[in-house]
Image 1: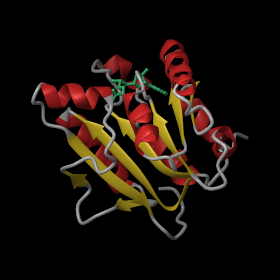
Image 2: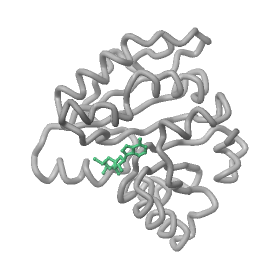
Image 3: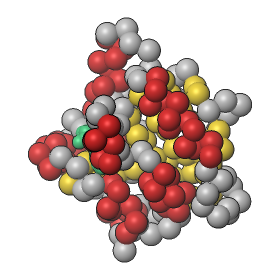
Length: 192
Ligand SMILES: C[S@@+](CC[C@H](N)C(=O)[O-])C[C@H]1O[C@@H](n2cnc3c(N)ncnc32)[C@H](O)[C@@H]1O
């Protein structure tokens, strides 16, 4: 089993980014808050290595690491209840139906997120594709372990200060950004 807390020297549940790509969000997040401890899982080895080395070079390697992993394979090996917040920014750039098997944010991943998150732990998702936002929202709404963090699952702003590279691009291009913010229900529920 993988205990993500041990990867970033934490004594408490940590943050996780799935698919950090070029790493802008993680780099900004650790620079902004000295208490943040965060693990990234990036399927592209090249970017996982570059961002991990950059974090190290900037002196953040003790509390922020990126591993070259497919999140769908790695999360089942995570110890339960060890993650406080999960970020998934602009996932799944696959548009052809035959590529849908590659989708990371799908029902099996939600079961794993429900398992690895602490009770009350948060999931923050961003996309600029309305159909994808609808699909993700339907998945979370149908899952017994999750509920919207606030009155509505859709939120207007990113409350975490740091921005992902795709988020910055979308803002520059004036594209609408759809944001979802859920939490794991505080009381244990069977995955559904
Ligand atoms: C469209 S890019 C977005 C990158 C970054 N999150 C951003 O917002 O700028 C999607 C990223 O997710 C990664 N990715 C896709 N499927 C993945 C998986 N199953 N596990 C881990 N990373 C994945 C891709 O390699 C890519 O870096």
